[in-house]
Image (tube, rainbow, N blue to C red):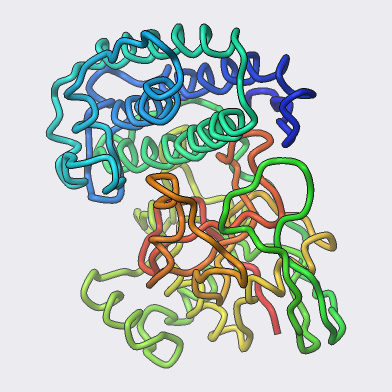
Length: 398
C-alpha cells in the first residue's frame, strides 16, 4: 500500500506549501491503482453500480476542471467541451450528462485521451497553485482532493468486480494488500447509558454530512470488539441461514429468493470447498479473516440469527476508540439522514451529499482499500441495502 499523505487543515496559510505536493500525490495514486490493468479492463461496466476505470479517472479530473479551473484560472482552455457531458456524474446544476448505465458504452474518449486530459488539467492546476489562493478556493480544492480519494476506493472496488466477474478470475496484483488479517475471538465492551456528542470536531477536512456536532442519548449497550469472521459467517450458511425466512427483513427475503443468493459476493463452492475471488485471483477462503462483500440484508439476517443486532451509527461512533476498525466498512442499523443543523451548500456543491439522504443505510469505519489518511471515526458512508461490491463487514451489538 502507498504511504500515507500528510493531511490538510482548515488554515490556508499553514497549508499552502503542502497543497501542491498533496495534489500531485493524490493524483498519482489514482493512476497507480490503474497501472496493473490492461487497456480492455478500463472500459468494462458489468452492472450499473460499477463504473469503468477510465470513467473514474476522467470524472475526478472533470471535477477540478469544472469547479476549480474554469472559474478561477484566467485564460484556462477547456480540454474538450464534450467531456462535460461525458464525465458529469449527477450534478443537475451543471447540465445534461451520459446516463449512468451507459458509461460502459463510451469506447471514446480513449484511455490515452483520458491520460492526456489528466495531464492537461494537472499542468493547469500547477499554475493555479503557484499563485494566490483565497480561503474559499482552498476549501474547494480540499473537497476536490477528498472527492478523488473517494473515487480511488471506488476504483479498487469496481476493478475487483470487473475482474471477479471475468470467468478466468484474472489476477489484479499479487499481492497488493494483505486481505486476510486474522481476527481474535469476539468480545463485547459495555457502554453506559448517557448523553454523548457525535459529529466532526477539529481543523481537518470533513464532508458536510458529518456536521453539525450534536448530542445524542444512548441506552446502555454492548458492542463487539471484533468483526465477524468468514468461519462465523460460514456457520450461518451451513445452519440454513439463507433458507430460513425468520432471520430476514421481508425485502431482504425477496432479494434472496429473486436473485438466488446463497453466499457473500465472490464466494464459490467448488467440489465441496469454498473459494473466493481476491486481488490475487481465486483462492481458498481464509476462515480467520473478516467476512466481506455482504449486503445490509445479509448483515441484518446474520445478526438476527446470532440473537443480536447491528449497532446504530451513534453507538458505533461513541464506542469506536475501544475497538480496532478499518478492515471493512461496517453496516449500521441507521438510515442515512441529515444531522441536526445540516445545511446544503449553494450551487452544484450542495448536491454532493444531501440529495442522497433517502433509502440508504449508513456504514462506518473504513476498509483495506480506503486511501491513506482518508478515514476518520465520524465519516458517514452510505449505500442501498442490496449492494455488496464494497468491502463491507459485520460488527454486532446487543
